[in-house]
Amino acid sequence: MTQSHPRISKAVIPAAGLGTRFLPATKATPKEMLPVVDKPAIQYVVEEAVSAGLDDILMVTGRNKRPLEDHFDRNYELESALEKKGDARRLAKVQESSDLATMHYVRQGDPRGLGHAVLCAAPHVGNEPFAVLLGDDLIDPRDPLLQRMIEVQELYGGSVVALMEVAPEQVHLYGCAAVESTGDRDVVKVSGLVEKPEPADAPSNYAIIGRYVLDPAVFEVLRETEPGRGGEIQLTDALQLLAQDEKVGGPVHGVVFKGRRYDTGDRGDYLRAIVRLACEREDLGPDFRSWLRSYVTEEM
Ligand code: UTP
Image (cartoon, rainbow, N blue to C red):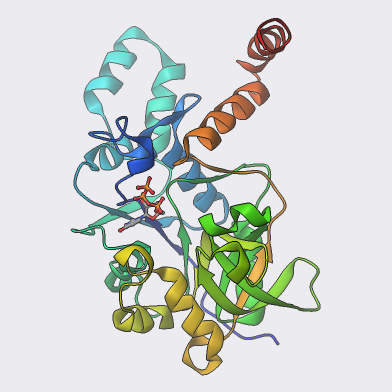
């Protein structure tokens, strides 16, 4: 089924959560600003959106999130200090994040859940399909996912979620999808969704990870969505309604992702992301790998 759609150009990045799993680091600093090697986690997410051709980015922020706006803005004082020193390499690093994309910001006020954060984007997005990238979910830049999700949305219409197979004992940490196969090997049709189910109630071990391409019909559904699990307005609950009734906003499909992904809001995953990405860096990798090798053999 091929349909004609406006080309997707807008990305929404919800980054208004409290980041309680990372306290006390996140008491006064947004978790999205925690460095992964030498870049804040959120910069990887914005770079991913830009690589997928989305250069209009709306970040959903809240109290304590000013550093996010500052990071993607110019810093003339720092730039002129580096210029005076003739440090062109570091100057380029400072300017890189402010030149990436057209950034917009909206404040969520009270963090009433991911669904509510997405709803805050409605006036900016209007009536066109759009992407959502969670600000604390890092997809390895070498394993492009969003590009494929946009292709799938253009092919099937409706909404597209990203799914990853997880161990049954991990299912309760995620939204979980009931799926049917399609003609495409990496695409499934989603027939139902449950937020953070107990293993016995999980319809599969396909977990939803933090990338979505959504039909704008989701806004109407979110407006009617009551707070669900944890008293929060859940995006998964709105998607469940879309999946069950295709007349509302088209079908929901899932792209099955088998690449590398890190939840930088989780301390263990955050450490794994840093070690892995540092090992693979041309500038830091060789030294760091040899230190890590001896650390593992001698100290563990
Ligand atoms: P999380 O479930 O990771 O919640 O949200 P959190 O509050 O940020 O972190 P913890 O669990 O307390 O440590 C997933 C994504 O949705 C955003 C978060 O910023 C994160 O990118 N979010 C969540 C919002 O923007 N607003 C909300 O009300 C809730």
